[in-house]
Length: 159
Image (cartoon, rainbow, N blue to C red; front, side):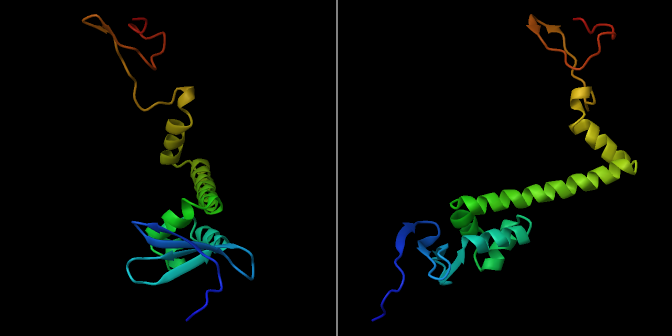
Protein backbone atom coordinates (compact mmCIF):
# COMPACT_ATOMS: atom_id res chain seq x y z
CA UNK A 1 0.00 0.00 0.00
CA UNK A 2 1.45 3.34 -1.10
CA UNK A 3 1.33 6.26 1.26
CA UNK A 4 0.44 9.59 -0.29
CA UNK A 5 3.12 12.22 0.35
CA UNK A 6 1.17 15.18 -1.01
CA UNK A 7 -2.26 16.27 -0.03
CA UNK A 8 -4.39 16.70 -3.11
CA UNK A 9 -7.78 18.17 -3.63
CA UNK A 10 -9.39 16.56 -6.65
CA UNK A 11 -12.34 17.62 -8.67
CA UNK A 12 -13.93 15.88 -11.62
CA UNK A 13 -14.48 17.46 -15.01
CA UNK A 14 -16.42 15.80 -17.78
CA UNK A 15 -14.08 17.20 -20.45
CA UNK A 16 -10.52 16.64 -19.29
CA UNK A 17 -10.60 14.11 -16.49
CA UNK A 18 -9.34 14.47 -12.93
CA UNK A 19 -7.52 17.58 -11.84
CA UNK A 20 -5.61 18.21 -8.67
CA UNK A 21 -3.68 21.15 -7.33
CA UNK A 22 -0.88 20.84 -4.84
CA UNK A 23 1.99 22.86 -3.50
CA UNK A 24 5.48 21.73 -4.50
CA UNK A 25 7.66 20.89 -1.48
CA UNK A 26 10.88 22.40 -2.81
CA UNK A 27 9.59 25.74 -4.11
CA UNK A 28 6.23 26.22 -2.46
CA UNK A 29 4.80 26.91 -5.94
CA UNK A 30 1.32 25.82 -6.96
CA UNK A 31 1.45 22.81 -9.30
CA UNK A 32 -1.49 21.84 -11.48
CA UNK A 33 -1.80 18.15 -12.32
CA UNK A 34 -3.92 17.16 -15.29
CA UNK A 35 -4.97 13.52 -15.70
CA UNK A 36 -6.54 12.84 -19.06
CA UNK A 37 -9.21 10.24 -19.80
CA UNK A 38 -7.11 9.35 -22.85
CA UNK A 39 -4.84 7.15 -20.75
CA UNK A 40 -1.73 9.30 -21.13
CA UNK A 41 -1.26 9.51 -17.38
CA UNK A 42 -0.63 12.61 -15.32
CA UNK A 43 1.14 15.66 -16.63
CA UNK A 44 2.07 18.51 -14.34
CA UNK A 45 3.70 21.92 -14.46
CA UNK A 46 4.21 24.82 -12.13
CA UNK A 47 2.74 28.23 -12.83
CA UNK A 48 6.26 29.49 -13.60
CA UNK A 49 6.84 26.67 -16.12
CA UNK A 50 3.53 27.48 -17.82
CA UNK A 51 4.39 31.20 -17.97
CA UNK A 52 7.90 30.50 -19.26
CA UNK A 53 6.52 28.19 -21.95
CA UNK A 54 4.13 30.90 -23.15
CA UNK A 55 6.86 33.55 -23.24
CA UNK A 56 9.24 31.17 -25.04
CA UNK A 57 6.60 30.37 -27.68
CA UNK A 58 5.51 34.02 -27.99
CA UNK A 59 2.01 33.28 -26.68
CA UNK A 60 1.36 30.28 -28.91
CA UNK A 61 -0.84 28.08 -26.71
CA UNK A 62 -0.39 24.91 -28.80
CA UNK A 63 3.41 25.20 -28.80
CA UNK A 64 3.51 25.97 -25.07
CA UNK A 65 1.31 22.94 -24.34
CA UNK A 66 3.63 20.70 -26.39
CA UNK A 67 6.64 21.94 -24.39
CA UNK A 68 4.86 20.90 -21.20
CA UNK A 69 3.59 17.57 -22.56
CA UNK A 70 -0.07 18.64 -22.44
CA UNK A 71 -2.76 18.85 -25.05
CA UNK A 72 -3.71 22.32 -26.20
CA UNK A 73 -7.17 21.99 -24.61
CA UNK A 74 -5.73 20.83 -21.27
CA UNK A 75 -3.23 23.68 -21.18
CA UNK A 76 -5.78 26.29 -22.24
CA UNK A 77 -8.53 25.09 -19.88
CA UNK A 78 -6.45 24.29 -16.79
CA UNK A 79 -3.68 26.87 -16.94
CA UNK A 80 -4.50 29.84 -19.18
CA UNK A 81 -8.15 30.20 -18.12
CA UNK A 82 -7.78 29.27 -14.46
CA UNK A 83 -4.46 30.76 -13.35
CA UNK A 84 -4.30 34.57 -13.62
CA UNK A 85 -0.48 34.62 -13.82
CA UNK A 86 -0.53 32.30 -16.85
CA UNK A 87 -3.22 34.36 -18.57
CA UNK A 88 -1.13 37.49 -17.91
CA UNK A 89 1.94 35.78 -19.43
CA UNK A 90 -0.07 35.01 -22.57
CA UNK A 91 -1.17 38.65 -22.79
CA UNK A 92 2.41 39.86 -22.21
CA UNK A 93 3.74 37.60 -24.97
CA UNK A 94 1.11 38.90 -27.38
CA UNK A 95 1.93 42.51 -26.49
CA UNK A 96 5.57 41.81 -27.33
CA UNK A 97 4.51 40.43 -30.73
CA UNK A 98 2.44 43.57 -31.36
CA UNK A 99 5.40 45.79 -30.45
CA UNK A 100 7.67 43.93 -32.87
CA UNK A 101 5.01 44.09 -35.59
CA UNK A 102 4.56 47.83 -35.11
CA UNK A 103 8.34 48.29 -35.42
CA UNK A 104 8.28 46.41 -38.76
CA UNK A 105 5.34 48.52 -39.95
CA UNK A 106 7.17 51.72 -39.00
CA UNK A 107 10.31 50.63 -40.91
CA UNK A 108 8.17 49.94 -43.97
CA UNK A 109 6.49 53.34 -43.67
CA UNK A 110 9.88 55.07 -43.44
CA UNK A 111 11.08 53.20 -46.54
CA UNK A 112 8.01 54.50 -48.40
CA UNK A 113 6.31 51.15 -48.90
CA UNK A 114 2.89 52.12 -50.33
CA UNK A 115 1.03 49.25 -48.63
CA UNK A 116 2.38 50.29 -45.21
CA UNK A 117 1.49 53.95 -45.71
CA UNK A 118 -2.01 53.03 -46.95
CA UNK A 119 -2.63 50.55 -44.12
CA UNK A 120 -1.57 53.07 -41.49
CA UNK A 121 -3.75 55.84 -42.89
CA UNK A 122 -6.78 53.53 -43.18
CA UNK A 123 -6.43 52.33 -39.59
CA UNK A 124 -4.99 55.00 -37.33
CA UNK A 125 -5.58 57.89 -39.76
CA UNK A 126 -9.38 57.50 -39.90
CA UNK A 127 -10.00 60.41 -37.56
CA UNK A 128 -8.13 62.65 -40.05
CA UNK A 129 -10.41 61.64 -42.89
CA UNK A 130 -8.44 58.77 -44.41
CA UNK A 131 -11.27 56.32 -44.95
CA UNK A 132 -11.68 53.48 -47.42
CA UNK A 133 -15.26 54.16 -48.45
CA UNK A 134 -17.60 57.08 -48.31
CA UNK A 135 -21.19 56.58 -47.23
CA UNK A 136 -23.75 58.63 -49.14
CA UNK A 137 -27.40 58.84 -48.24
CA UNK A 138 -30.55 60.85 -48.53
CA UNK A 139 -34.31 60.66 -48.09
CA UNK A 140 -36.09 57.58 -49.37
CA UNK A 141 -39.86 57.27 -48.87
CA UNK A 142 -39.80 59.20 -45.62
CA UNK A 143 -36.71 57.41 -44.34
CA UNK A 144 -33.76 59.61 -43.44
CA UNK A 145 -30.36 58.16 -44.22
CA UNK A 146 -27.26 59.61 -42.58
CA UNK A 147 -24.42 60.99 -44.67
CA UNK A 148 -20.94 60.28 -43.37
CA UNK A 149 -17.60 61.50 -44.62
CA UNK A 150 -18.72 64.12 -47.17
CA UNK A 151 -16.98 67.50 -47.16
CA UNK A 152 -19.34 70.52 -46.95
CA UNK A 153 -18.24 71.91 -50.34
CA UNK A 154 -19.63 68.96 -52.35
CA UNK A 155 -22.99 69.75 -54.01
CA UNK A 156 -25.77 67.84 -52.25
CA UNK A 157 -23.73 67.32 -49.09
CA UNK A 158 -26.16 69.47 -47.11
CA UNK A 159 -29.12 67.09 -47.56
